[in-house]
Image (cartoon, rainbow over all chains, first blue to last red):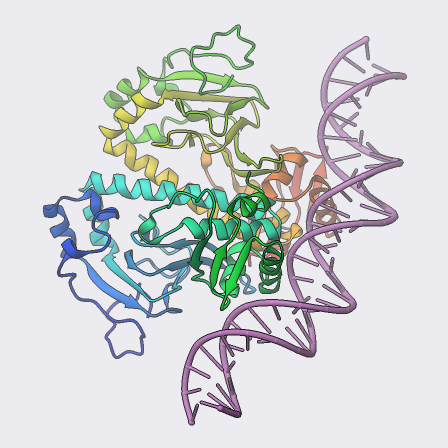
Length: 255
Length: 255
DNA sequence: TCTTTAAATTGACTTCTCTTAATGTTATCA
DNA sequence: TGATAACATTAAGAGAAGTCAATTTAAAGA
């Protein structure tokens, strides 16, 4: 069930679970760092009245390209993938959303991309018109959303360099470095001077290839090469150990 | 002379001409459509006090990656190129700025890319700190800048699809289609049903290749192929006639 | 007008990534 | 535990774009 489809019920075949008021914004994992951090408790109370919580299973579509934008959402838990699909089926991932990212094209008439759940996802949703009204009356929230959008633009432009100018090996190394420091809640760890870093890759090889503008097979070959170079170790195809952080930086083409 | 370098004088070897108060915002070409369109005449008057006009010759660097951000700018005339350069010299263009675009990373500490003049360029510049203060006190302006940033994000994501998933021919056709409708002042003409469209390519082949993530030679070969397909005609290497708009759409991979 | 220089095109060849197909691995479920 | 299905890796060959070099075209200056 798409986020934008109104009046859905729990029994309409949707795998996502449905709206109820978020009872405790105070206990919300992203109260302190997301867009809500710009709001006083009083303001938050007003926003909560138009908010519904919704859950999606890994793989679910959250909203769809070119359907009318009906709801915005803020990610509470899980990872969301934004992507575009060309008419012949070629797909390009535009970015990943982590808590507390905001999704939906602010002030837009329709969605300009697909959003789908990479892992199980929990979001707060806001009806477009009501949220727009609220946003117009709350400059502090607009300021916060502006900041989030600026960060997204920075990220998009970094990926443009990767997609336009980097080799398959450099793209793969760059992605691993980004994932190694990207933690939940958007907090970035400082890169380690040495020693190993271990993390779980949340994406399948297919999702990685859509992200890097490559094929599954090419991604796999780059992983193999990074292993043979002694830079990484892979367990169960999903757990990555970065054995040589500086070495990985060196092949990533960034330094 | 970079936009960010303070205290420059007209005789310091800079090819750009230097600051004076813009005497007549009323007569400004972009008064009605740029960020200033969000301001009343009174508010505009306050902004004008911290504004300097500056001119750059084609090819001049306007600001530089990773130098401290000292000034923002609004484009009054000409075309500005934003790009990133990898340590080994590979370059990727991130986007083009036309009047009345705003350049400089809002709320940023340093520039995250290079900006250079593609054609002769005239900008209004604003010292960062003073502009930030003004921005904080002027929600209407922040709202406008937010909208401009959202548009930039949409554009960046469109290019990501192109860079990640399109062939050289598709990229070249896509670029020509974009340029054929992109006019000065950011106004988009409706695409013609049929008949030819003529426009001047403002970029050299080298600049085009940096834009499309290709080499000069590959761009040239795609132009040749589009000519052989009867879709375009090129005069003096710079003037493009689109002979078959629908045909160009078809090879662009978008429809 | 002629010369010089820079930019663009073309051709031959190389390299990198994709395609196709087979094999291997992991997780799920009977 | 074994069978099945989904996911991942590997290999060989094809195709697309890059590299290097030569030629052509356009623009600028003498």
